[in-house]
Image 1 (cartoon, rainbow, N blue to C red):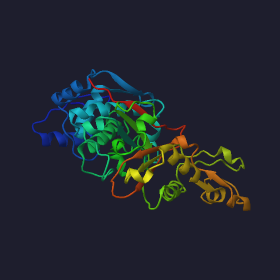
Image 2 (cartoon, rainbow, N blue to C red):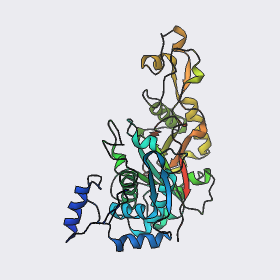
Image 3 (spheres, one colour):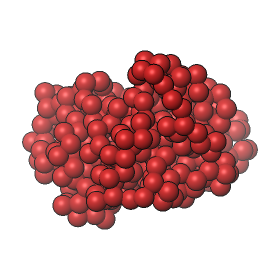
Image 4 (cartoon, rainbow, N blue to C red):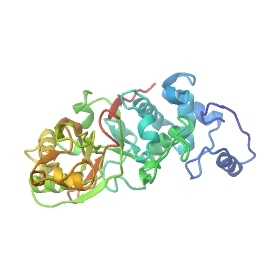
Length: 355
């Protein structure tokens, strides 16, 4: 069975182990063994999806690629998904192929970003997608295989092959699998997908091109917690571009978006909304012009005024995505910077459609 590369072809095998080895030889894996995508198994996924195999979900004109439902199904099978996961994988594919997301950028950048998948709505409970303990770790089939399917689609259907179009210098483990759900029923906060224009009854997938999560160990009240979070989010070297030798610091290109994953008990945040969190973090995410010049993020000699002139490192509170997820035992936060400026790639949310 073909995985969806433009030179589509079928292979035959005598036993499953032989099939896995042939797939390795064809370069269709992420380095781990895959489930052979038999025509029967792919057919089960297509039936669940309720869409024809030859339907084009999106294109990558720069690579002369058309990504079809059939190609997505084959890669979801190889990732180890169950058929009922397929509508989520389809929605994630539609989101990352949206022109607003600009898939070519984060999938080929030297920066080595991955595509994080955030699932919301009833489907998270129906499929038991993990939103709590060990959120970014192993142990849950839905999270692991949905995230892995996205990576295999990138490699096999979108040609984001390491060393070829994927030019990551370092990469990070999220490039194997990067899928979470929001624990939306365990908080008073508005769910992410509702903030982004969907109803609470809808199921959605949000894709976000980003670095790996930076874990912030926090304590105290919300103000203390967000001071720590803002400090972690304000590290040098995070998606800032230089403006040359100029004093017009309003022209600094900031990091595009930021995702904050906040764990613990929801009661810690009584009296606080997600909008309050965003405003507070935005107000604290600043570095001095002197710091940015020392790191060569801004060119020019350091003046005395530079030590006290602070620049915001993200343009607007609206550019911060807040997700309530992770274990309930302690308030810890995942700080996840975007791949680049917002003009380069923007988070996209799509509804999950079922047959």
